[in-house]
Length: 148
Ligand code: FES
Image (cartoon, rainbow, N blue to C red):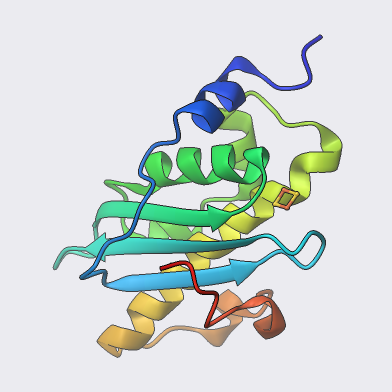
């Protein structure tokens, strides 16, 4: 059996929504402590709290690229609250699976989405339960990763 599903290969070879949103409403930057790979996620949010656009940049492996690409497709059109509920497991399932030793890569995508939503809340002054983000290790949030 092939190590990577066709969907993973497709999103790796033709990643969707790569790039940057200059006037983003939220930007999330995260790093994966295990491998040192980093990712930046941008979201554009309308007045109803719906994510109308999402782009990402990464210095990451193929699995990180594929999961981020799929994650952006899954959250565009969703509310920020729905985006927070997106688990790396759901993204991996949508990609028809990842090898076990690459599962940690999918966490980067999930954390980047969550960091972008947190930044959106902070910028808009929207109050939230800090518990929502308590599993995000501040040390893994990189604020000057130089992806521009
Ligand atoms: Fe670093 Fe995959 S090996 S994100």
